[in-house]
Image (cartoon, rainbow, N blue to C red; front, side, top):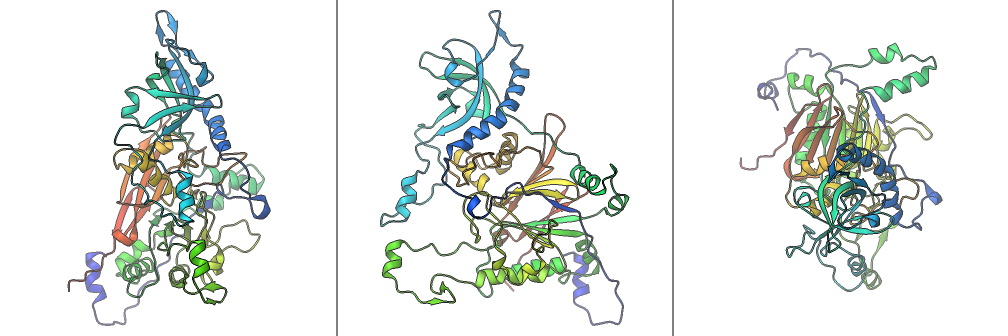
Length: 501
């Protein structure tokens, strides 16, 4: 809250008439890149291994083009570096380069036996913070449809690699059959669309005359901002939502004076990046369910299900929606499918807020847009992409250090939104296309439920610029991110409750 608003909130009523403050609208054009088929069209009979082949087939030409440009003129003993089509075609003592998929052979990675033990009487081990072996047993492999090749060399020590990323390596095979790397390349950032590019194409198609609408151009207003928050962690307990109430009153302009209300009027949209509800009680095993006598009320087990968190979230959203549009991403603890891409939270969870959702059969987004995780779309012409934090949290387990922004940058340069899926991150078994492949570079990439707020700007080889935002957990930090849609600059608004009074 601004300092000048303190006195304005603690003053006697007056007859002064205050001007009406209108919230600035924003252009919102979501993509549906991560929507899955409905009903019988969605099934899990197919093999997960197809995802790696689809990813390699899509990204291999890009990384080979970069590698050929970088290594095409290198010569040793009068011979140029030879390109090898398959990893098993590498010959000992010959300087060559090959492209493939990285596989990290790490003994501490989880396996299917851990998941089975959770459903039986054997107690499952707690999840590991890191998969890195302290004894140095981890190995880096490069694989394709022909087989695997063990990689060694100094570049591996200074580069961030995880299972599932695509890269090209140059080097030679030694007497032990290991491939000693001299240099390595990744696909790097893809093409980045121009601002308003997709909106202008849509306008041209809608008009049918080859020209964009003048009305559309005039409707674009400057000064808008987008609020991004994550990890609300609502559990439904009384007294647990005071900070959440402060957030709600701030966005409605009720917890500030007139000067700050003018600034709040510029906030055109609220994006909630996952984990709105605190993770519930673990499910009972089969044996516990058979021995436990439970009483059901209204079709659910009243002893195992607590409707208060969902109801509190619905009330929070319904209070904000008349004033500000909301985009809601699910997270790891939210009532949605666990595997990525998580589908939108069902409207039945929001009996009050769903009134602001689009009508059945409508192609236009509603005032309340419950979307997938990951998600991407165009806001004020900028391409935005974000997720609830699971891909970055899983990459964190593969690498040393805690530099979340470096992980986010590498994920974009790998051109894959969830490289460790399906190895250690649950996902849908795609059959025809790996939806996690990043085909167009975003202007803004945000990740929710991170330990602390961080932001930076990275650049690509052809002039791409991306604003990276690590959004902290609001439940723990009370921080909300404000993104200026003109400059893509970021600021933080902090909500705190002081108990020592």
